[in-house]
Image (cartoon, rainbow, N blue to C red; front, side):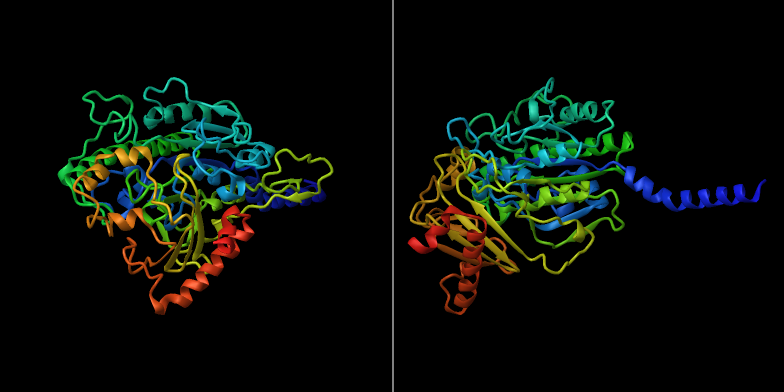
Length: 494
């Protein structure tokens, strides 16, 4: 062989060998499954619950990273989902509460959601199950695959079958799947879980695993009554249905050789559908399960105490996908009707940050502070709360503290609450608080959530904690200004 030809051939083979890993990485798809349950707390075996039957979530945790200090920024379905899909606090984007037809809560038209950034980068996007966002022309998906599911979004195994058909379509584009169950949310009327006691299984593709009330372990934030045990047994059944969806989704990804290409995130919009959790920014309502499986993780089965919140989800997904949002006209929140012509183009900014750099770190530095914001649940439930959690201390600013704490209609009608108040409110306890203290809250609540995880001992009026109180108050007000929170005025006017 001619020597020059041989030399060229060897050089070509050498370059090919050197470049092939990079070429493979460059061509590797970056898919995402974002699995959002509805009102799901720490009722997971991987989080230490001995009653829960959750093999799917246990498997996901064993293959990924389990967060112990992950926080929903608001403990209400619709507002929380707006944060998840925008990377911005709900008070910044105007999504103050439920996106019901009679409430008009919705995000500003100027919001650029996760799907828009992914769409611009060549992704196909799909929503399956509960949507609960507004307006639809802002939070849009290329596809909505909800047809033919008996029992709707409470039948997660059937939902996954629809997901399988969509995922395996003849389409070379990477995908983003927004998969949302309606379980374990209450349903079927105020105070009831949906169809949980029917003799026939209304969700035939999903197995029906019953739980006995006497098996229930009452968490310290709920009263130890027979009514609570009965409701918890039904709740655990719904949680198990969600887990079956997780387990089947993992099987679908494995069967189609997608595990090495797909980021899988599991979490919930807010805490369990019980008084003391949902609609509250107390720990049971905001501190939630959050499990991430990154396809390229080296360390697996990691437990991290990195403190994150739902504004971090969109930036993390875009980071994984290698997508940098393009520049958009510089507008202020609420400028829906202002002409955007001739506006300066600026990079689109989020209020969260990607947690991918700390996904394999158990105790990362600098991840020990979060801020939360809740204003409404239903339209009748005005009760703005702003929260800063810094290290082990948590400050709650009850802005409308003069008002009694309002109840969601289904939580008020629930056997758990009705049985609690049936004998009177005066000195009766609900979890770690008297009913009076639960309904009539002070302007500030300060807790050491390490020593007092169920928030029974308010430190706000204790003299030795005044310096800490003032420090956290200052942090909270600065954050409210930075995020354009309309309720920041309350620091100056009241």
